[in-house]
Image (cartoon, rainbow, N blue to C red; front, side, top):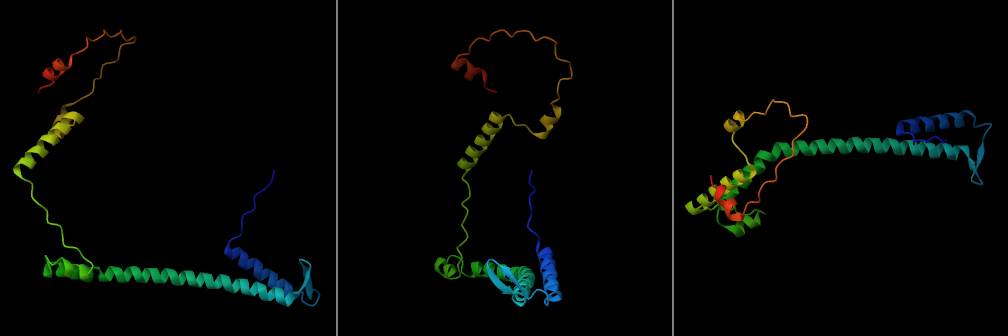
Length: 178
């Protein structure tokens, strides 16, 4: 049964590196060099390497803080300038309404003109909406309020249902009219 070893976080790494530096400096007289991967490395070189690691971590932390500050400054600037940019765009759209090439110079498109529905289209849309409500069995809130569930207990043993006669398509369409 093995244990999983997690990587230490940056604070722990910094602490570990500082402890190594302190120990190597304290015992520099007794440990002038170490044999690492078949090569002799001076303890002063190891201390320099550890200090470089700690400096790199510190630079990363300050760069991250600077990044977050820059992002916050960007968001604040965008928020402060929203009204001016929006007003400018609206003014240009009014000023150059109908002049597509001039609006294109500003990277904008003319607002699409919405064509009103004809009376025939309105009637067709209303019929389609009514058919959709009927097909989905949707009702308004007043009708929903009148619908209640049955509170009677179900029979212990259900009786077999009688087979319903098959309806012809002509009979189904004549009975569906309401």
